[in-house]
Length: 319
Image (cartoon, rainbow, N blue to C red; front, side, top):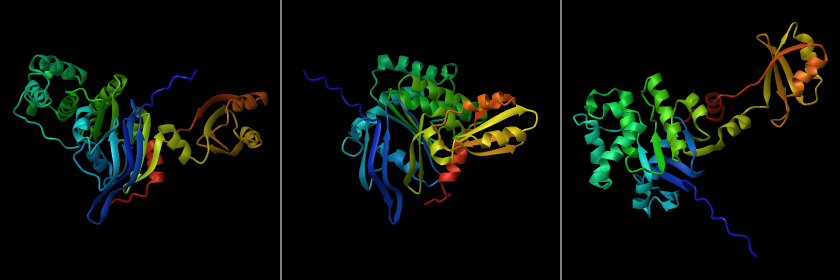
């Protein structure tokens, strides 16, 4: 008896050879990208790298010059209407009707998406609660802070319950508290099953927020995959830091004899140990030190930050 066929999971977003030209300038150059359903995906690149162009193509606002792009299996050119029903697009700069009340604004967009009148009030209340604006439901939009207006913009793209969110610099111009609140909302949306693609220059926040990232420069994809993967790829080797009590010289001499180690150095009272590969189990370090009578006090991995990775893999070139 044949085994049952397991249906393939359709990617949330898939681009194949995606290219966009503006006259002689190539904004996107043969971009091949796959984003899985449920990802909180960071899209990283300098200004002019092609991030916004990619998001606008996925949002059906811009046609590719060549190549294909699909959202949940729907072609963004041939099935644009189907794509618009499953996405929520929040551009980096968006206009709001500042003389309208918050609920009027969201009700208007609910009507645009043909949500029945009887259902719209509950839908508006639900999205306001989700973005933390329930207490501002009767407020005039122009009186809201920048952070609250950004959250209102997010509520607008959620009004029709899209499966894929395309967010272009959603934390742009926000103060630290507002950024933290925005990131917490995005984590909650991922927990609810949304696929979120977020372009941002705030790389330290993407590092802890996203499970996967893509780095592009001059329209070309440099890396796409897990956040840890790009760190491992860019670092020369696995690095751990060791602290001990007393003179570090005997410990350094001892660790240099370990076959798994390529380099040992004292840095600001700590010992930096570089391994030959990322597959080494570092647990032998404290065991080796303790057996030799050295008082071991600490061990931790050196994590290459996403900002440092970005600086290493890009040249700062723009279109």
